[in-house]
Amino acid sequence: MSEKDSLQTWLGLNKTKLNQSIFKTKCAKWKKWQEESSLHIFPCACPVRNPECIFIETYYKLENALEIMRNEAVYTEALNSYQRIRDNADAVIEWARAYESLGLGILHFEPNILITVQAEPYLYISTELPTNDISQLLKFKEIFTECYYSEQYENY
Image (cartoon, rainbow, N blue to C red; front, side, top):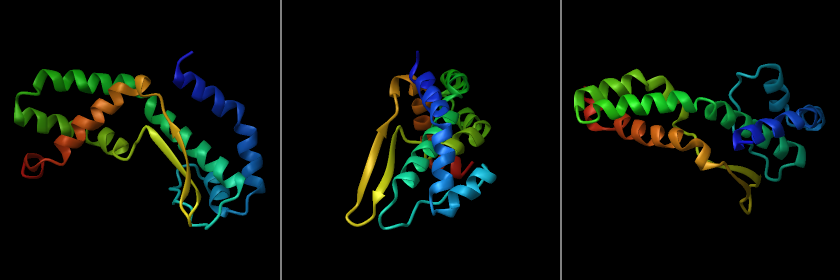
């Protein structure tokens, strides 16, 4: 079983706990997110967080990471395309433009997920995603970011 499959299984097994935690927590943003899943969730500003809120945020971040990780074939295709044109500066800019939507969607993706437990003093829980399962994603992000923030891209 791959790490992505294990993550999918964990999310499935904990769906009931997620719903119970959302019902129990006093943090209204999670109830709103449950009703409207496309809602942007801002970081928690509570000085000390309750266990339900920590669990919900962990679930939320892992679910988002899995959605990004599922596109591994798309990242592989983009990298193969890049390899064919990498020595042609204009073609590389066009490549970055063609994959701009995909690249911007993963710009803030990190394989190390941090969940704030307490603001002062700052304490967090760290969850490391399996980098061997997302090597194409990480390579695509690296190349896209380099192209996207280049002077050539800005002036194209």
